[in-house]
Amino acid sequence: MSVVNAEPSQVTRRDSTAWKLASLPDDLDRVSAESFCRQVAAAHYENFTVATRLVPTGMRQDLANVYTFARWSDDIADESDGDATDALKSWRSSLEDCFAGAPHHPVFVALSRTIERHNLSIEPFADLIDAFIQDQTVKRYESREQLLDYCRRSANPVGRIVLCLANCREMNQFELSDSICTGLQLVNFWQDVRRDYLAGRIYLPAEDMRQHGVTEAMLESTSASPEYIALLTEEVAWAEACFDQGQSLVKTAPTVLTPAIRLFLGGGRGVANAIRRSGFDTLAKRPTLHRIAKLRLAGHAAISMMLSRMSNLFRGWVS
Image (cartoon, rainbow, N blue to C red; front, top):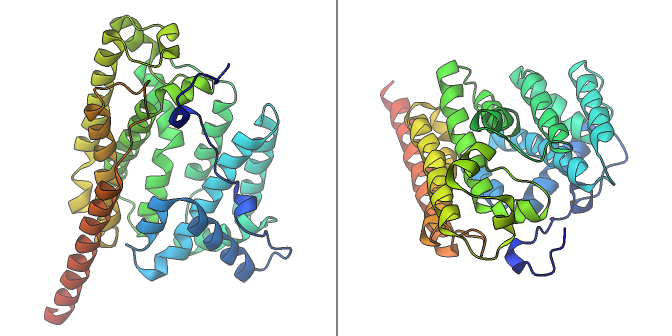
């Protein structure tokens, strides 16, 4: 599919792969492996870097290890020549070796320490890889149920892993986290409709498209039709409903995670509002958060972190 006439912001631009962000250590010693993960995490994702500063120092290495695993998996999916299914299946086999106590890749050497320290299950990690495998062949989704099943494996596992890093394993907390992570995935889809379309994927449920009279041909346009605007209005409301369903996690999750949860919830709602301000036309230009809005969110999260630490200190005084 040609992207010659695409608005520049709508053309997918891949960041450097994990193996280009830092030098992969030759040895399988844990110190080198963990250093590699820290370098990858720090070099890539702005929100991740901010979020790690909002959690206790003792959690940061584990977060970097988990992030690098997810990033490496994503890079395998996107950077392989042609179908990456075999490469991803090989990566999943390496994951199984890691959980069996025989890691043979620096990413898994680092991750194995996190797995052991927090008694993590293989399921969320395997789910992430399975979602990337699905991406190799599934380019359309018929219903919301199918899309939610994809989110269950592509987005929700990360939230569950992070809760486990904070020693939280209650099912109601997992479900609240799932709502937030699904909402974040959905709002990212609606932000990137044209970008994904140019890459050959459509995440808008086909049932919803038919209901609003939106055809695939309409996604080739550089401006939104009234039908498309009506569709996006409904889809953004769906994402925001997910945020509403998960909002109480801010109050019920371990306090060490509260600032980061506020940051990501605020970011997701901010993107939804950016789409709204664009008139729900995500075909003409990709809506994004302005730098001032990002700084405001980071500031609010930092204040939340300080209040949380003061509260914990006070409880220590009176106990």
